[in-house]
Image 1 (cartoon, helix red, strand yellow):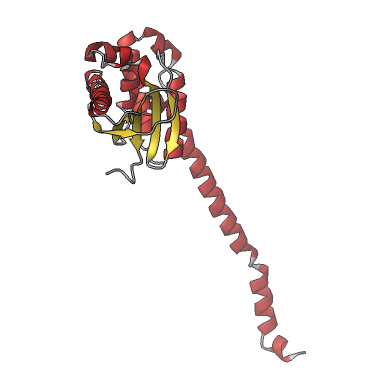
Image 2 (spheres, rainbow, N blue to C red):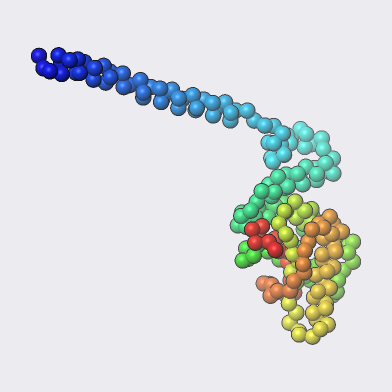
Amino acid sequence: MSLTSRHGFGTENKGQARTLWLYTLSDLMSLLLCFFVLLFAMSRVESGRWEQIFGVTIHDEAAMTAEERADKEAERNAAALAEVRDANYLQALMTERLGGLSLGFPVTVSRVPDGVQMTMPADALFASGAARDDAALAQTIAPLAQLLATVPNAISVLVSAPRSPTPDAWRAALARGQAFTDALAHAGLDHVGAIETRDLPGNGPQIALLLRDRENAP
């Protein structure tokens, strides 16, 4: 008989080896418990939050008035845009939302260094190069203003820098920017900031809205 057998050392080690599987079993049971708790938590759908983001059911949608549908759409837009901080995602989201609007003028959404830029041909908004009546222009851009009203980003109006260096040309360009800003406020978008002149892409004079990066907003 060996010394380890005589003192029971070998027997003790063998006993511990026979119970090591219990550690693995306890870990497995803990993981299974966490898994089923997670499944239970995911199975409880918060219907209010779901409807806020994805809209109400078809039955409720059919029973709504036009005003109630507009309010519900505004709530969905607000929920989708409230937490947007990435400018690339904001660009994609605005492009998707604009695709569902009935606008009488084209809007080009592009990524610029200081945010997301929405560019429109000024001639489609202003007649004969002059500023249009605020009420008429507000009616034209009302769907766009309602969409942007849910955007938490700082917004600036950009107008094409005039090709002529004369003071009258600059005054006319800034007058367009001011008329556009006033029309946005008339349509319900009242958090538009400064009016700037830039070299905007496109044929002819352009007017744009700049949704500034939230991290770099002044």
